[in-house]
Length: 77
Image (cartoon, rainbow, N blue to C red; front, side, top):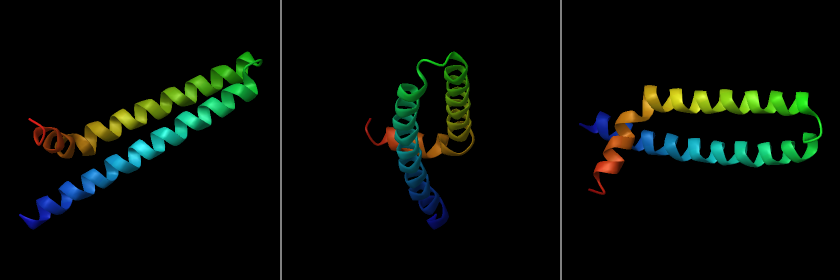
């Protein structure tokens, strides 16, 4: 049972880190957009990389965070 509780807290830590990384991606994208908004090629590249980041975050949730998030949400029922 101790192993499952340990994984539960690790899951919460990973969720917090993922949210922090998402915030950094958002701020970075805003800064980059202001710098390159007059360049359509650079804007397309930035949009592509943002999409890749989004897919990676979704894949990470799907593979490792589904159970901890489910437990966290069940606490509020």
